[in-house]
Image 1 (spheres, one colour):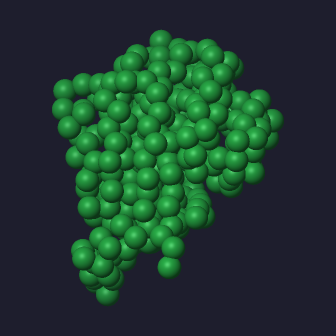
Image 2: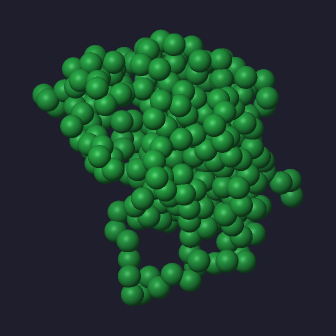
Length: 275
């Protein structure tokens, strides 16, 4: 039986407040990843634009776009189709049903034909460590179905979501073997330690690959990572900008889950997660 391979391109970028500049940089990375034969490319949170704490609600709203006619997403979909590569990206999404101008922090995924196959709106807003995202953002209210890939299903989370292990477990129970976490992880005392510890924990406790592209510079710490199902670090971009190609192996997932059958050993007769 032929082993199934999946080549991932993880991006670490320093987004500016200019979304056109960030779009052009993103398109360059898509082309580069395709030339390096990646199956998917993964961008961090705030791919569309950096949102500084001084930015007003109106300014963020003016940057945001509606999903149905987003020029930012349309261009990325065109490149996804042109270069035959799946994309997980992020953008600020206007909420047409919300009169207060708060926007969604949204992740999207395309298939290799440039078709959007999943939308995820961040569930847990970063109201911690002196930040209050809820002043400018609306909470998502759905956990989308995992995305089908050549080696299994892939679930989406965003940044602060990793502090809530229920979400990654639900995605795993729903079939995910890869969990992608686009992030804008902020610098600070113990913050990198939290980041690394939780990425590894989410991988090990679920027997999944974690792909976590992060922002670097501005207020962010970098350290974009790919972690395998046993907690081994396959990629750590440190403080550099750019992309790195990492092989994801289906047989590694099956091997770890057989050796460490945490999902099988859960006491679902005593406790259950309800999604």
